[in-house]
Image: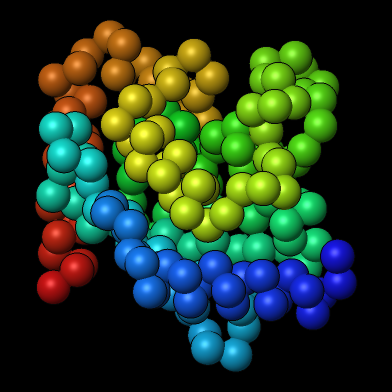
Length: 168
């Protein structure tokens, strides 16, 4: 797929999201002149420790999109087993397509060209609601989730409050 085609596809997905918004997030371009760099606002899912939070993240698409996945990084502070301390999201759907050289993921769980911004963000919202502490990007958060849930919730609540302060 050419760069022109990938840019066209991203513009189409952005238009679709603006026309038919999806509960739980909003998306737009960081800079109107660059369709490969998106800013998203993820709303903390109800009935989770993240409820009430407004978490800003960036989705950066490669020119080879949709053959290769974007990267996603939270700009807002996050405390979550599957988000590293720098804010990088680590979930299967954002991993390069094909077999996992360590054998943790099936190829079918990894990036596929049929994925869209919507499927990525729905997966991220699902990840917030149901963290995977077996394959952590943030070992401290995973350990705390397993061993001291009240402390985990307290750390998440601090991130939620901070996101609310930054949203206003």
